Amino acid sequence: MDRRSLIKNAGIAGVLAAGIAPAVHAQAAVRWRLASSFPKSLDTIFGTAETFSKKVSDMTGGKFQISVHASGELMPALGVLDGVQNASVEMAHTAPYYFYGKDPTFALGCAVPFGMNTRQMNAWMYEGNGLKLMREFYAKYNVFSLPGGNTGAQMGGWFRKEIKSVADLKGLKFRTNPIAGKVLEPFGMIPQSIPGADLYPALEKGTIDALEWVGPYDDQKLGFNKVAPFYYYPGWWEGGPQLDFYINSKAWEGLPAEYKAVVEAAAAHAHVTMTAKYDAKNPIALKQLVGSGTKLRPFTQDVMNAAFKSAQQIYADLNNSNPEWKKVYTDYAKFLADQNAWFRFTEGTYDRFMQQQKL
Image (cartoon, rainbow, N blue to C red; front, side):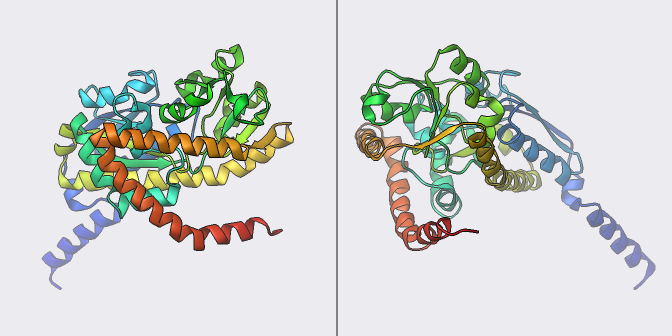
């Protein structure tokens, strides 16, 4: 090998050893802002955007910086979609079903009652038509989307009183996501949409009678067990809720191909990390909550059956009235049916057996 070749190869090796691909290394600096729908106190959900931002910076040698802003800093928690759409910020991290009021189709990008679990949602998004269909829908709002985490199946929430039947739901002011609220309205519940940062004061002051957020780890940090003694499961409205990174379409298209690849890789990393955090932290938190006096209760079968029936009626009505919903939901429902048939023989049977064993 001659001297010039040696120097050339050594130079490439040095760049690669530094963890910077030559094309990325040559890119100009980029500065973006990300508006989160979540408070800084939640290291799981808010922290997912920080995990994403750090990975983008690390993979570009600090050339691409994304500052992460908690709910309320740049805009309200539920205003982040508008912020991305009108380019007030380049991107957001949020739960798509928050925007059910704009169009129910948003919920299909996150979670619907009695919908997919986390693994099924990942399969639909990455290997089915999920990403394709949701991106076609989001394009109408000047948004490009990437999966941005999943909490896993959630808990059913905190109640001041015991829920023994559907009749006990009547008159309760219950904080939940918008589509779950629609399912519960026929039972006389009064759904409330309140951002995470405002939940504890609302429950403590009696503005609401009950609430659901995510699960034991977050719920313990937010202190709900200090106000409401009964903790219900499962959160049938959120079997596998996916969060999203929303990126302004023009900002996305303005990125060079190398930076687009970095953003996609960083989002996938953050997506997996969020689920791992919840799966690791929730069991410990649940033990602590029960140990401190929390009364753990399952929703009764009549509540589950009535809610399932109500949800199916809502979906049928939306299929008849909303072409956008029908286009996505038709594919979603078919994929879910196939997944449930498969999980019935594998994951479901295995999980039921293992949960009965003493380890």
